[in-house]
Length: 400
Image (cartoon, rainbow, N blue to C red; front, side, top):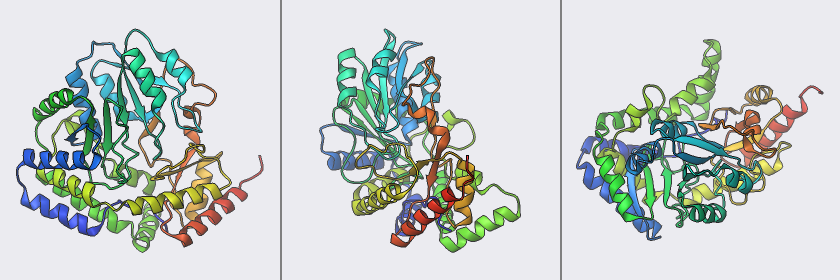
């Protein structure tokens, strides 16, 4: 059985993470070292702030800005659900802007139509591992006096990219399911050093993440990494079937960075020293060739399939997830599982943001119900087998 996704972290990194937890240390010093490391690697003139998560950093950004109640944040029409929750928690209104399903870029006409006198910010999300061109969004934000925030949580690949330098703020995630995961943590990049200092001060008022909680997270993801060894994973899936457990729902709950409990109680913390140290290690030591090889396999796989996909016009996607569009998602999932491939419909927290206006004809929101995420092949043999399995499953579909 090929698992849908394995934590992108090695055993040596996990050992270091455990050692960092045992060592403890000065939180401020560890955070400052991680921020200096990110600044040195990015070298774009902006300044870094390390947060517990992208949600945490975005929450502190909005707390610092103190936008008038009822102000509008223009957002990509498909984005992370919790980002909308953070916007609404601060008394603001999220206004979705259509995302073209083929290019994964904002629809410029929809963007212009969404603008009102209450608009204060534009939050643009890079989706499915792509990096959408931001020149038009930059020009629009400057022309209309909007703060441009780039959500690059799904776009980091360790290749030296730390966001578009022209953005006011860029958000990069190192959460549990991300490329180069540090099991948590985020890097925020600020064009305005004064804004960065103000957000840093707002974050400093939060309670610290407990080192014990970080240590428990290390143990949890070490267990998940062991579980996704193929032989073990096959036994796990069979056991779930025997006992009537939905393995898909169980895994999706397990890999969520902030699953269960009160969202704001969980995100309103500052990272412990061990979290910052692991983040710095991942920034410095992650091999970009690993992500490059994965991206090449992903492109070859998706190009060989008889299924459409969101972002088909995008060049250079990191393919950290492999979404396809199916006319019958449950049938595709079942057929692939029978053939030894664990696909899912819940590999990310993306959701279509509801709005006053109906989605446009080419808007990605219209396609999200058809999205299935394929497992990532780990080599040529996996790639060939998965292509054959998808083709066989599609061919077995009953005529309409």
